[in-house]
Length: 100
Image (cartoon, helix red, strand yellow):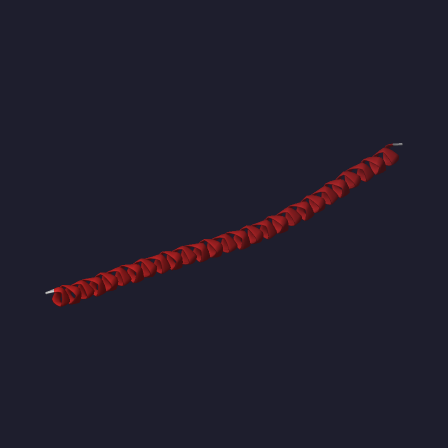
């Protein structure tokens, strides 16, 4: 009886050790999986941030391009107005000289 009780206790303790070992193994695997998922998530977040920055840079470039185009258009209009005004004054001067 004493020997069987000792055997049972040793079995119980070895079962407990096996259970603890299994739990620690499962815990390690779970932690590794969550670490891998976290790394994947960070990679996706980094990709997202990179895409976002790229899009912002592109939109900024487009805005700069649009502003430059508008400025050039205004300059052309201004030059055209000056040219027209000059032509008009020249015409009026010619008309005046003819009227005299």
